[in-house]
Length: 298
Image (cartoon, rainbow, N blue to C red; front, top):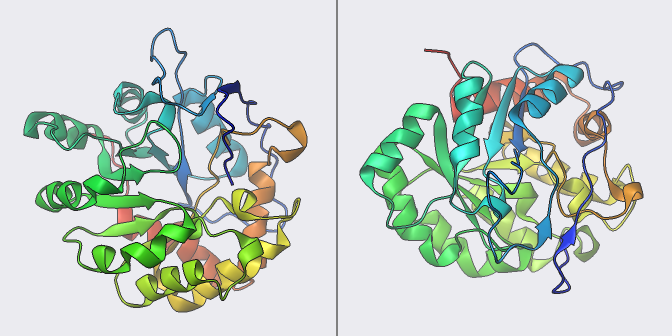
């Protein structure tokens, strides 16, 4: 989990990704949750942020994809840049055949601005109330309505304990939605916790997708984060055709080098979630392609 003690600290850069050993990455594989971060002098950080991350450029992200053998990536607007989506758009413009994006927007954004984001390759927006810099759940319905009008989805990033309170709100949304980081449910609370059971209820009673990502944030253990595996297994069992994978690169908000994960190892962790190669293919290729639409250079 992300912890904030009121002091804005410098977090660590990502580790160099290793080559996956347990997973044979299929052609057309997707990484659906990563961020790009600009130098603060060019892309100022918001005042309400919880950390100071080092730069992580679009080229750095694509190089990481190449190292682990993945074709496509979803760039999710990072919290420290707030609703300034300029670097996100720059990434999508530079790699139109590799990347698509998820923006963070204010409720009063103009139709013109939405059209510009959509033209760049943005596929949806993120609701985030876990760390400073996001646009929170109080804007859920109004932003979902805007998304429904333009064919976008809503990515929901809220702590697990919030899900029991918002089940009905999510089930009534007009726009498609996807749940961030397996619902941000702490593994220590167990599969039968009210929060994870609420997430499962949402998954079983809607057409939402779920990101099998952020396991290292949910675990109470060190790598290979075995306590998270039952959660991923339960989600896959509930909706095998609506699961996607993400690494959360460049792993912001971490301050101890021993806790910074390796993308190749995280990807190998998918083999613990499911040993079925066909299911792995769905999670890495078919499901994200259906949800996001394959990027195409124009």
